[in-house]
Length: 276
Image (cartoon, rainbow, N blue to C red; front, side, top):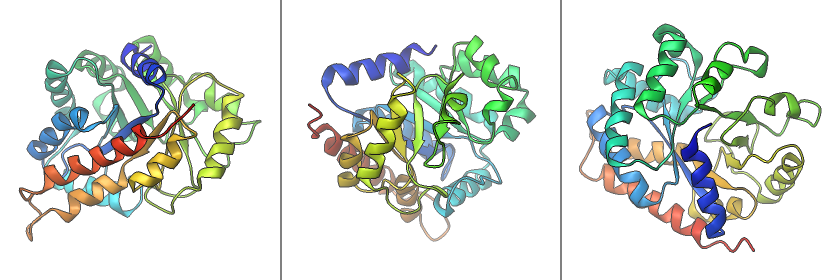
């Protein structure tokens, strides 16, 4: 399975801290600006980078990420543009794990096996495909694992102990725990409830557990980091992109510094958590 994801979580354990997983939509607000953001994320403190694959109907995402998808699509971003971008990133950064997150339709249109081969060759480490349940593992999950790509599963507050083993059966890389029911960018997670959920999930798996949905501020990320192996922040960063566009929807000079500054603040807050 993906050596970079395993190595990153091993390094985090050795350092005694949780990690920061960042999410941005590829091509939002344009491919050049996104590529600049991507290049700056590791130095700002992102331990794992999730890249959203633009899609016209991101049903699990809230208004912020839906708008990011729309901006990317309007700027002409397509799945075939993302893999060369990852390849260029990988030439500069051989270590930071890259996970592609999204929906199956663009992959189906690309050609599933061709996509998996091209993604692996570009330097992608894992996939999160939110609309492929475990019952469809033969469709993409198993071929991905055969090619050394992690297939990262989602669990939610409604995933009970009877369902959890099925969710985990072919998952790899890490488990993404959705801390609240509903769509991305909704209500803030309650740290005590997250702690209880993470403890329950740990009884079923040795995979690292990353917690996302609703984490916006550094203090929230720090609270989650007391319980989970990583905190995932997406909608808050996509909102920052949106707030730094001009009247015609183009990136302003402040956009990249603002997003990277927020990532830095989140990473510093997480790093300050005593997990002993």
